[in-house]
Length: 207
Image: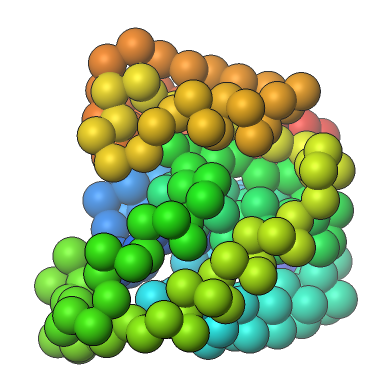
């Protein structure tokens, strides 16, 4: 992602979407539109993330290394579901702040049910993926590489009505970090727009 000299010093918000999702996801587009209207000073970038853990780790790792090295301004991460896991993994590597929205804490546990099936993105892209056992093994290794306790600066946004992930796991995993746990809701995180202003302030407190 090239950043021009005119963008020097501006905050850079990297949003990471969930498993089998894309930059066209609802929350991603909602945040992008809100930033354009309310915080045009913030650069917004959301990469397309491969559902294959090894490919995703390699591409995201290279992307963040380059951005942290070249961007003359603060960098913050936000991620939903599997994107929350990737945000944490990257934040720990680079000492970045991150906001996690109904994040996947132990995604390797969820992957076996998707093995050896033709998978298509929820957001409609015309692609098909097929996960193997080696993908589960790779993801488990990535999970185990995270330090305990976490060293980063995190804000957990979770809803107890999440039908896909048990938010109690996230509460435990991100203990000692900022928490906002809401009753009801679902995996998509109902009412996400209510937190957008605070999300930006958390990631970029001096901007």
